[in-house]
Length: 375
Image (cartoon, rainbow, N blue to C red; front, side, top):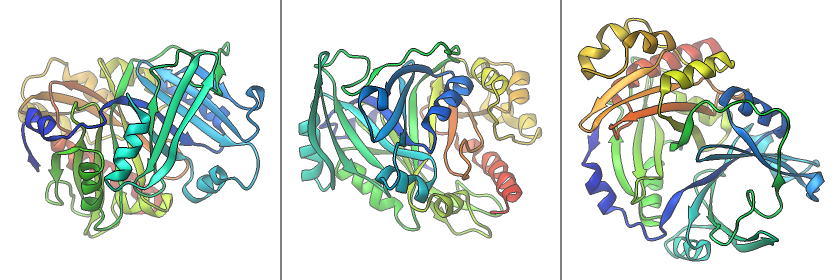
């Protein structure tokens, strides 16, 4: 593992856009209405807005969910033969777009394209009685895109074309706060290409790098580099496969997703024990590490505030860096294909990504791959 002080990283990043945070994450879904019910029930998201036939949209049906600073859009096509339908057929349900909140969407598009990005959406202004939103976009790895969203002149529920969605069914939230990071899987030998993209096109700096000595088991391996923008609000780890005796989780992802794409979304909480307890009670399944992990974890990470017993009962992992420690746990894939999953993370000062947990985590993933027959 190679890293450097977080202050130096953020100083090195050329935050020319700048990026204020994650505006929304859009998933293309075969049945957005049912998926909305799942994310509300299992993850505690709240209904926010809807666009569909009732709003005059005859092409797509979209549900916007919110929990604190996290917004998800779940989108399905309403007719056959659409680009969205073809995307779902090729990749299964998954993340299509990561939207970034900016002060100036026109400038953000112009500058990133000037620096080498391929345009996905030229700046468009959308208006209604609540004001206007300007949105633009660029291509990234695979068919994943980034939107730039400027909403300083808008005070509606979400954006033009959406109306408030207030169903009677509104399960309570579970303490998810914001998007901590989003991990992208790319093909063999492609990691550095996309690291350079985020550095050159978007002004990011490299936060941490891991090679196949850091991230490996007896059977599989991968390499990863973490890119961050200048204020640290946007972090994108980029993974690529590495040679191993068997098929790694990255290779499995690429086989089933059909191209590079978003592997997992890490969401933060201030109380991971309560959050994970709620999720388990609501039916979310998590990866489990052997009980032996907990026999030595405190020897490795030192004193922590939490009692180790509930962490072990829930399968929550612990790791430490020079800044503090973190607690993390990973769901099993949330779609039929073994592609997209979620990480729940609580940072107690740590700025890293759980290097000390990689071996136990990857062995847990390999056990799941073996059950699926894809190892």
